[in-house]
Image 1 (cartoon, helix red, strand yellow):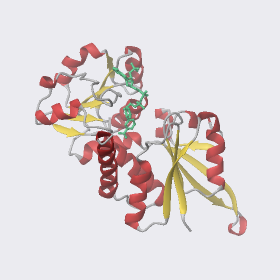
Image 2 (cartoon, protein in one colour):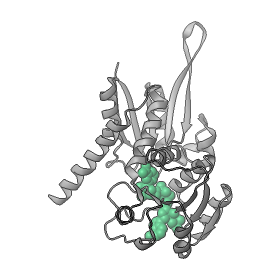
Image 3 (cartoon, protein in one colour):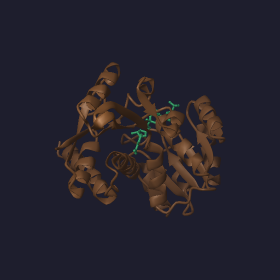
Image 4 (tube, protein in one colour):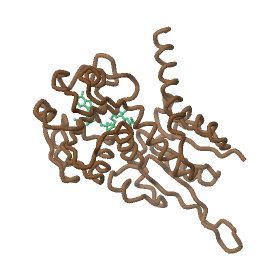
Length: 288
Ligand code: NAP
């Protein structure tokens, strides 16, 4: 029987997860289909319990539901997701009662965003353990990154526009918080530079880092994935390792896929599906 998977969020129309996961199911011959569902915050509990009752294979959650999920009473949240304060992946499993009868559906919450980011760095040959990592941003994605990179042994600095958020996040991972006006100095001291803000999503957003400060020994990771940002093109010009946000999207999806199916995710297939969809969108925009 075909198993249904999905992503819940609002807005959700532009999610790249359906083409990415459907390509993975096809490549491995798994009978699965993945849809995007528009679910508002007050409807989250009903939607998750409904999906569990209907035998869904698994779910992803995105804006604005990742933090909301922690309030659900019967969700078993794993340690990393609880630390980060957000759930982006849900798995279902049925406990067997007497005679093999199903008596309870376990609903478990995970966070694969941070691990996705870590795998994106490692996949590009970046050494994280012992490296000086500068994270710009202190929102949800920055939190996932900070906790995962801290667990991996990175030395973390965090710079954010609202500086108190940088201090708070840094304190929770044993790092140091800074203002954006400290960025020039921080860049010169860092091995790995990560943009975890939404700056760069729109053309004309401009730069937070002067391109001349980037050097060939840097690894630069921009988690924005909808376009090639100025930061990524500056990093390429400087001869630095440049990693775009598509790889984090793909690896967080691959981690979720492996939780649901127990199969190794076809990362190359997933990456191709995402890049093709982004390219199609670009062509459609240019074509009006
Ligand atoms: P969020 O929780 O709303 O946090 C936004 C962050 O961006 C905050 O640190 C905010 O600073 C900063 N920011 C926003 N506008 C800014 C500006 N004009 N100047 C300086 N800083 C600014 O959002 P999020 O969920 O962390 O997502 C952030 C970005 O990551 C988005 O572009 C999202 O698409 C991307 N993302 C990518 C992946 C992936 O898989 N590649 C996964 C998750 C998110 P303040 O705290 O000062 O407001």
